[in-house]
Length: 374
Ligand code: ATP
Image 1 (cartoon, rainbow, N blue to C red):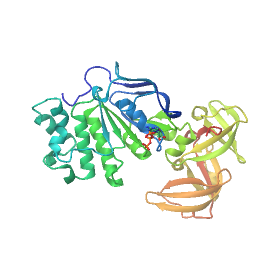
Image 2 (cartoon, rainbow, N blue to C red; image 1 turned 30 degrees about the horizontal axis):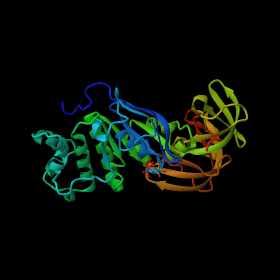
Image 3 (tube, rainbow, N blue to C red; image 1 turned 180 degrees about the vertical axis):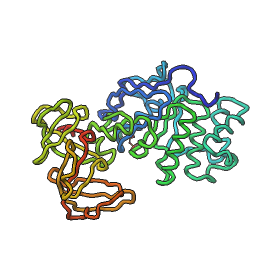
Image 4 (tube, protein in one colour; image 1 turned 90 degrees about the vertical axis):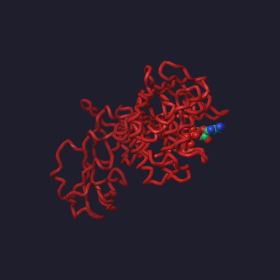
């Protein structure tokens, strides 16, 4: 079927030791990365981290300084872009302004000398839900619609991999959210590999099966969105993907598969498997917990907290109602600005600024990071 562009063997994208230097500047340190065939993969990181350069090396738009790019069993490292079974969608849609939508999408087929394009183009326009707009010119469409034309145009030649370089960067927030779901739907429908570059963590988390978080030309961590969020292995990843409370602690002892640490005048427990720091006694570790994993209790109720929970005392310094939840800032014995988000079911009216509180959470939701690493 024309929708299954991945026919013909394994189509994993394999980067082996691929790197890029500009003079003495290293934009991408040699990295190994496998993008499974048919997955939605995101390269996520702040501006300048090397994600676009990585994408462009896959596209063939940038010559790697070292390493190789394989697509399935084909080494494409030295192939020009147009000979690779990939296509790229850019932030600037780069549509042909004088051609209508139909002809924009048909372009790739016509260039290959294909005469009867109608059925394929119509199918593609259906896929991106622009069947009604075929005879309009690009300037008559909204930004989101133009971007969908760009996607249709890139998919018409059935690439094995679609590369997307900040494709939603020019759209306003509401439209961007719609387009995130739309691109995800299109990817599921065509079933080919999408590699998506973005600096927006929410975007990467919403769309991707697997996210590679990049920092300083390196992949810091690779994983599913939930894995990265719940199990960050570096402070960069912990802070880049949402808010985390990081508590300075010192390794006290081990007990089974758990680490016990001293923080302030208390002790906290975390699974050894979730500790990315060295675990020798006396070693420094940053203990983290996501704000919504914490339960907040008024100090008067602290006696009811079950044993086996991590607990910290503090005082509320600020609260703000943010719709579905309330955000509390707590000055605690171990962290001056502890953030806690509480869903607004049975909100305790005593939890106001100035109240003495106890925070508690499960050791299973606790992670440990290497304090020494930057
Ligand atoms: P952005 O989101 O801003 O595009 P990015 O994470 O995609 O950032 P890259 O575009 O991959 O980052 O660039 C990585 C680094 O390489 C940056 O510091 C950039 O300045 C540098 N760089 C990119 N292209 C060149 C070039 N042609 N010559 C010199 N340095 C370059």
